[in-house]
Amino acid sequence: MSSSGRRIVIVGDSIAACTAARELRARGHKGSLTMIGADADGCYARPPLSKHVLKGEAVEAETWDLCDLDITTIVDRAVSTDTENRIVTTAAGTDVPYDRLIVATGAAARRIAAPDQAGETVLRTFDDVRSLRPRLDAAQTAIVVGAGFLGMEVASACAARGIAVTVVDVDPPLQRLLGSFLSDAIVARAEASSVQFVRTNAPVALVGEPVTGIEFADTKLAADVVVTCAGDVPQTDWLDGAGIADRIGVGVDYLCATAIPGVFAAGDVAYARAASRRAPFWSNAVAQGKVAAASALGLEPTCAPTDDYFWTEILGLSIKVVGPLPLQGEPTVLEGSVDDGSALLQWNHEDGRATIVAYGMKKAVGLLRKLARNNGVPTT
Image (cartoon, rainbow, N blue to C red; front, top):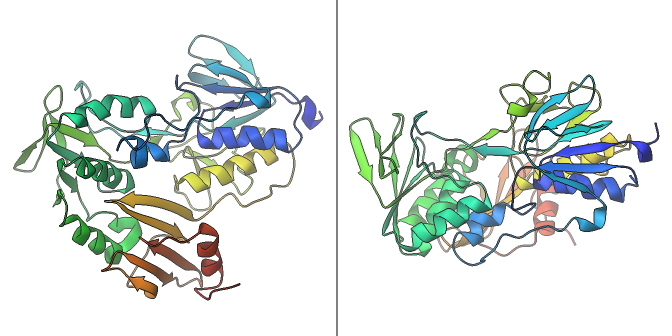
């Protein structure tokens, strides 16, 4: 069957799904293209939700218009797939046949509430933001469970509103990925704001319905708003029994192909089988969307399925990172000063690669990529 005659189905409305759809058309696919997505708000950028929309810098999510791609859109949740007969079934009972399937259902917020406990607040979708913003408008205190990227961005949104916020985690903020050097710098910056950090090795439980606080070990904390930012879990329930997913997510090779012929995966739901771990960053989702699309058409991808770039904004300070994580030890300071909140930093890894970090310093991503490729040596 020619690629133009293939029925291609994308399940998900994530950045990986949207990128795959555009790449399919850009690479010449003229056949049937169907996207199944459960979010009533459609396709939109999720990173700005915690960075800008929650803080009120933007009122609406940044949506993507795919109407120029001639896509059949099904707003429903996929509940199962039959890989032998190549059919995806939705919650409404619609059977959608495919010749090639791209799994891009992303991940859902990890929850810590008791099984029958209601009222937990998480931040993953635009609807989550719509629910949380008015509560922050009326809040004076907040608790954030989790000191990862999302947790620190939520804490930053609280601090920008003048809310006294406590962040609770096992480790100091972002230490697992950015290392102690940058984690210490973030803590020092937080000392000048309304953000406090509490560490605990004990499990954290939510208190109340609706939730009014947390408890761990012999400690109880209360706040006007409690937000769980405890990571995410790949959305693979609809793949149960299909032989596509496991406890980590959907394993793929360098072509984003799964263990099942004709099925590909991209984005937060996927992981590289060679690494046995997910890397749920926006840049990886974009790269994998392009690779999965090309592979579904039997074409050579134009890029690798990974892209070691991400950025975050914490307490008014932008942090851009190009290169592998985690970071260990102290960096070489290429420019500026961390104490002054503006520095260009370099970490060297044992395998010869380098990671470049623009800490509060305005630098183009292209320059950071060049520096990473050339081990910190500027190029013209």
